[in-house]
Image (tube, rainbow, N blue to C red; front, side, top):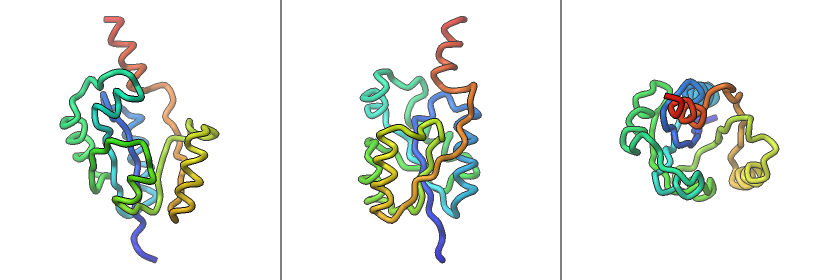
Length: 138
């Protein structure tokens, strides 16, 4: 069996322990980990807010993590389009998305393409949204 290529994707704004845990856990499942960092316009299209940390800095932070083998900037949430470009074997997402209709469809789509969707433990009690809220208190 060849090397397992893994993929995960996120905004990675205000990098925190939840981000690190996702990336570390993803790397435990594959030989080569590609991490997609969402472009600002993509983030604004679905979160309706701009990231605090600029895209180039977010990508550089992720690139510096020892578990990451490659970083790509992505402008789509369509995992099929991404798979067509980089042909990963597994895709990783936090288990807080389990049961979500969009991710159930993505899992089926990945299966059809020959890739597996793997849910990894979600780190509770921390998120970029929570950090934004805490900053408002100061």
